[in-house]
Image (tube, rainbow, N blue to C red):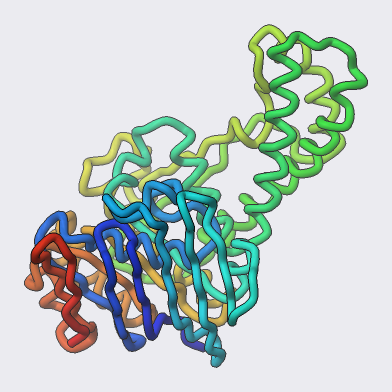
Length: 365
């Protein structure tokens, strides 16, 4: 099994950090300090080294340090499968973020070919009880971790759907305006569905093959759409009258949902206790990581924001044992170093403090 980790991360004018330089080794990274010192921002910076919008889904402008608002830059040294890559990610004046890999301009999707990053943040704790959109986003992040091209397929589908929805809102009835858009939606929509099924099968296999202290979640993709390209194209054409009345597209992968069940109790995840729901999420992230380790050849980088504070001591220790056994560089945050005591010297410690309005990173140790 190979390794995947950051050996250096530098933040410049990013969020509350005017400048922070972090040198790390392959061990997990335990980040602690008072609230408001920018711990989560460090995790967000790491998340931007992978395709997508990052763990906060923020715009480039929202990530710039105030009041200067000069733009921001991240640089990182990534050690991936016996290769070393220098990554630069930046934004100027709130413009869309740019990427360079080894000194050459690159698309964001290219990051998915050299790294894998997974995260669990407090905002995801409501996954099982919020609307379907959040669960689709969670499913697509898992899918993207296995299939980096999933992002481009999803963007192509969304672009075609937006154009079709515009025609629907304008009450355009001429079939010729719809044919090309529906053909594109059918092609990409079927691919999205197939990609999601691949990811769910990989997660299920990873859960079945592992003995873990965390409960297993049985996941089901709820979707009423036809699975084949031709059947979906036909369904979109047949559904135009209903879609015209609604002013939007009512069939397709954008209407899917993810249904989870606490397997041992046969209880829907939405009906589980808060603690059980959190444990199910941790279980899925660990299963995703195990499946990726086999698929990619190295365990992914994990970002776990405030995860220790929401687990009892036994499960916290079990989580740390599983991370260590996996061999993942997990970046974890907490308010105090005592939350990471069970890790001992298996992890490196970073203390983040604030003085004179500037954040400072002390470590690793």
